[in-house]
Image (cartoon, rainbow, N blue to C red; front, top):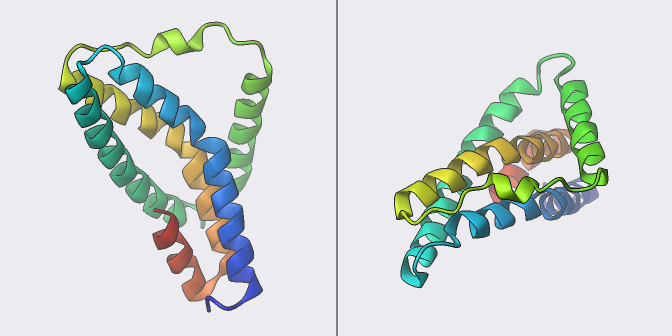
Length: 146
C-alpha cells in the first residue's frame, strides 16, 4: 500500500496543500499571543497549537464522511477559489482583526477559533487528496498528516 506511486503522489499533494494553506494559522497564533509575557506566550502557542491539531483531526474525519455527498467537492473548490481571489486583492488591514490578549486563556481561545475557521479549506483539500488514494492508503495518509 505505501509502496505504490499513488500513495507517494498523494502524500506529496497533501504536504503541498498543508504548506500553502497553513501559513495563515501561524500568523494568527503569533498575533493572538503577542501581548502576553514571554512564558505565557509559549504556553498559549503550545495549548493553542495542540487544540488546533485536535480540531483539525476531528474536521478531517468529518470531511471524509462528507466527501461522499454529491457536490461537496464543488463547494470546496468554490471556497478555495474565493480564498484565492481574496489573497490577490490588496490587504485592507485584516491582520488587525485578530485581537492580542493579555490573558492566556483568551489568547488560546482566539487561536482555537481562528484555526477552526481557517482549517476548513485545508481539511477539505487533504481529505479530497486522500480519497483519491483509495483503500487503506487513504487512512494512512490522513493519519500521517494529522
